[in-house]
Amino acid sequence: MPTYPNLAGQGYGYILKQLQDFRDGKRVSSIMSAMAMTIPASAGNQDLKDIAAYFHQMKPMWSAPGLAGTPTDAQRQLGKSLYILGDHTDRIPACAACHGLAGEGNGPMAVPSLAGQNTAYIVAQLQQFASGKRNNSTGHVMHTIARRLTAKQMSAIAAYVEHLDPETTLGVGPKDFKQYIRAMQTMHDKKPAGTKGSSPAPASSSQ
Ligand code: HEC
Image 1: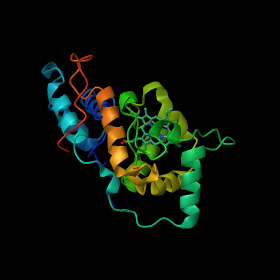
Image 2: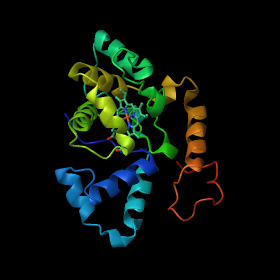
Image 3: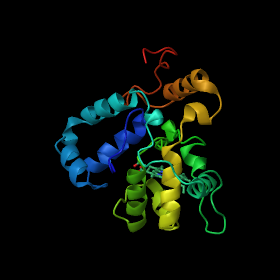
């Protein structure tokens, strides 16, 4: 089962932050750190921005097939309940509060999209946040949350989000959802820093 992430359509700000974190040694992965470190800081981030923009404009991963197979009803129910409502007894916040009801993420806040993401990758990230091996979440937000999750809860949430598809889950239909995504994109820093405040991207795109 793949433990690498699906990046198509992932938020620009989030990918850029991860690449910088790999390069600067704040997030460690034997494969990614080596790659990102070949790009010197003196390159002024432009190469990293180009890579982030490239993945961001790709057709989102949301319709990715369920690589982990179909979750059981019990798993789906636990995953859905934790994702949407959290668990007050265990002080687990609703993932949806930040990652979006349909796992669409929050571009301007650099909160990654989780919809359609590989189950094994999600579980691996949660374990690494919990153990501190991945240590780059601003304000330790994800470390705090992941430490409160049991292994069973982690895999239930991962199985649930892998099957999320914002286009249908949000119930607004593909056409409207694409408009919503475009509106989000005009808000966040799709363009390299320094061009902030320039006029928003046109509403139509070749995508
Ligand atoms: C307060 C906001 C917030 C909440 C609540 C939250 N997250 Fe996150 N999450 C983030 C942010 C921000 C990041 C990006 C961290 C970074 O920069 O590396 C993230 C990253 C992740 C990642 C890594 C994704 C990737 O592509 O590598 C996973 C997995 C994740 N969160 C799962 C969850 C789950 C499961 C829950 C609910 C139990 C949850 N999050 C609740 C803000 C939140």
